[in-house]
Amino acid sequence: MSANSWTIAAARDALRKGEITAVDLTMSCLTAIDAGDGLNAFVHKTPDLALDQARAADVRLATGAAPSMCGIPLGIKDVFCTKGVPSQAGSNILKGFKPEYESTVTRKLFGDGAVMLGKLNMDEFAMGSSNESSCYGPAVNPWKVDDILRTPGGSSGGSAAAVAADLCLGATGTDTGGSIRQPAAFTGITGIKPTYGRVSRWGVIAYASSLDQAGPMTKSVRDAAIFLQSMAGHDPMDSTSADLPVPDFEAALTGDIRGKKIGIPREYRIDGLPAELDALWSQGVAMMKDAGAEIVDISLPHTKYALPTYYVIAPAEASSNLARYDGVRYGHRAALASGDGITEMYEKTRASGFGPEVQRRIMVGTYVLSAGFYDAYYNRARKVRALIKRDFEQAFAAGIDAILAPIAPSSAFGLGEVGTTDPVEMYLNDVFTVTLNLAGLPGVAVPVGLDKKGLPVGLQLIGRPWEEGALLNHAYVLERAAGFVSKPQKWW
Amino acid sequence: MSIDIDTARKVAKLARIRVEDSDLPKLAGQLSGILGFMEQLNEVNVDGIDPMVSVTPMRLKRRADVVTDGNIQDQILQNAPDAREGFFAVPKVVE
Image (cartoon, rainbow over all chains, first blue to last red):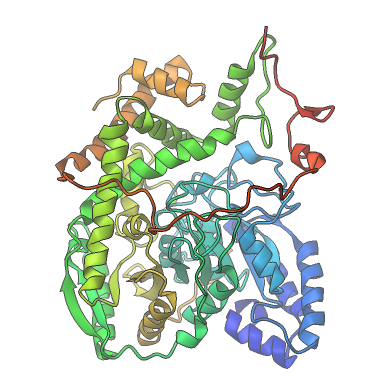
């Protein structure tokens, strides 16, 4: 098995024992990346930087006291600002932008010795569930069971495709409404969206600031624990970053969940959930029960309103955040006609720099925040959001330790199949994932099996705030019980 | 709530995104569809509920009001589409 297919945990141990060098490990990934162009996952490759970092990691490993992530080759979602390396968030409006600074997440990862292989494809400004709104064109799912090219999900589609296809050992993602968990599910990998505030948002190009949260996408639950450890922690540069100690997540993986209460939310059993996905959910429930957990039927009554709430609040915040793209300070400026003034510059720059879905969300956000509609849409959505959060708080107050639910209403769909005429059709993909972003809760996606087509299906566990360790332990139990080891057949 | 063409034009103007007149009917239709989807929120009884204003109840940290950064003009202008003589350059604003 070539080194690029290793888990982070296995690579860490091999690096520490001197069984492989960080340079050789990085080279195996760079080779896989160059052979993986058909997946369109890596959109800016940084092999020279990667090898420099790998050489430095080898020096550090030789001292015998290197952090767990030292020498681990990663892909970085294009939404993270990386110094001197293109960082476009999948948008033409940031074409040519090379940040003069490093995001807190990548600074911390590099501080621990991690290696960056390049930047990964994503939906433009993380707005999308299929990676099809990217200025680079869609990333492609490495899982191919017929002649259809499928989406790896979105918005972290490049991250998911790269990890599933063994182009890297792990990748960063961000999750505003499901953008880590849904692509993880569509590609048969693991991904955790931490509690809002656990990971710094500084240097992460903003979409919806009260919902955005970065997390790792990996080949195992243990890897997610190791990777998250390096990303997490208080950052004075992010005013919503939590000033709380970060526990040892890997040490929390005991495999023992006896006596824990797992909530099964009845409102997630929606019409239109395919029978085989429902059956896999039931199998997941049985696995948790066999592991000694107590299964409890729970109600989260405002679940059905989460999606419309999200599609008011996220565009409202986006319309404000994306006002900064005006053609003055960075990125793209449209060619102007003689006599054009500054307003024409703004309007032409934003019309030519933003793609159609981003334009729609900015305009929806502008509308719901405009005078006369602010109370009817935005304030109402914020009130419903409070009720959605209260649903979860009541469940946890009643003793529930974690909630087990589906991630998406289908397995990976074909590129071009969804939402081409009606944007709302694509939004429906987020029905099971947006709830916990609205509530600020941690959630982890774990692959549990294949559907009849042979495509991976995952389940998500939702945890109490700040208890990612306990949540990952539940995920670890589910992972071991499900024993999902399938890999996509290489066709690319 | 249905969005007519004039409202679509006004929203595009507020958002500073140029939309050609020929594209306004399609835009109005899509915005109407999205806002129609949001109408479901009117079913929820929100009497006495305060709007959620922070994800985690917390007091924002304060820091001393002192200069902690600066003298990085070159870095700030580095990515500008048009920078001249130490400034961002834009089309003429004042007649």
